[in-house]
Image (tube, rainbow, N blue to C red):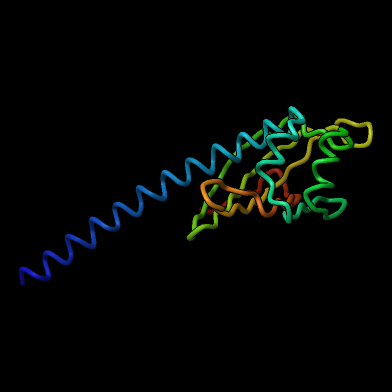
Length: 150
């Protein structure tokens, strides 16, 4: 009976430690995601270059491209991500992979016009050595009433 009680206590402690670790990682990834929106607004391609994996993919309403094209678009201002108003966020972490869903209103300057568009943005990050690298960023156009289920 004592062995069962000790086993249950040890399992409970391991589970609490796991939740605490995930909470810490979730906070780290959330900060990185929010920083990314600021860097995009500021056209800070140096910071973004450090964040984006060389093989990352970016899916927009008008096409899909890789890291060099995304950085060029940001630097040139052909799409200027002026502000991402984040309404809701969900994060899932599994091993060295983190997925972030941001429900946003994106205010951007595109083809000479200021636009405001509702999106759910899916971001995929991978822990490489000590840093998180963005592997994918996908914009999904959604209705104003769309909610992220957690």
